[in-house]
Length: 114
Image (tube, rainbow, N blue to C red; front, side, top):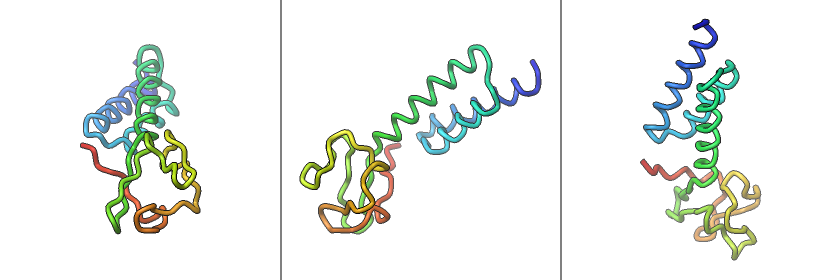
């Protein structure tokens, strides 16, 4: 096995470890790095699949307002304020505010669903 292929495998195992810990941000970065290195064969198929899975998990991630505790759930959206169900937190407009307390998006943090 050449050094590049070995590095890609190691990066994959690191990413898999982050997935097991439910650290999806770190897992996405690690899988993306594995893709940059250039995985081959079965490793490429695994990395492609897991990268798509972790990106979907991140799109579905809930966020909580650190001021009032309101939880934004992408599956529900915020129809009362023009945000359709299925809208990931990252895709909310910068003008969106917490429907419960009026706080800006920067007052929200990801819900730890470990």
